[in-house]
Length: 239
Image 1 (spheres, rainbow, N blue to C red):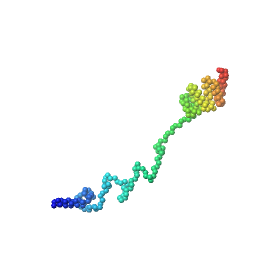
Image 2: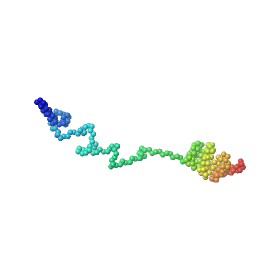
Image 3: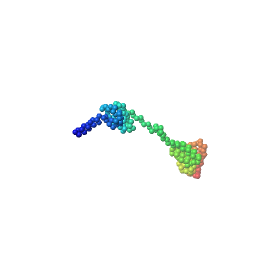
Image 4: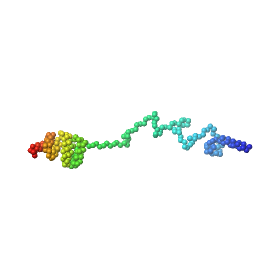
């Protein structure tokens, strides 16, 4: 009889616990603290009430992207990833601007243009008049390198070399000037002077005559012509 009484008491207690709403079992719910006056006055919620959303009530739950209003499906998350590729219907990206269009791009400096042969000749003449023969020689040499057919540059180079005592090199420069322009009279006279100095009287007389023929109006044309005649007479006399 005692065993039957114990089972009857336990069954009654189980029925009593089942009748209490689940959300009031731990206190602190919407009905207030247990044992308060409000607890006896409030009616129990309907048995159809849904339990609170575990995801929404968790402080660690993340809301769905672009969650819509209640009863509406959530909008899809935009494709805003910096690594996402655009879809087929996406507008093409604008073409990248060339590097030189950047406001911070620097225009490469153009290399300085090399001086012309004429500019080098003018520079050499100015230097020679100042007595700067080495620098003048360099200027004339650069001029003939820039323009090998420049007879004036070759002749001036020969004059500079002669003043430096480099007679053989000067003679070669005069010959280059004549090869560049056979109608240019001045190197013939200059070459004749060096040929006469070297003892080549026949060649010197020939060079003098050619100068007088090409520049008959030159102030010294008559004197150069007489010099050519005198050398020729000396050769006939065997002197």
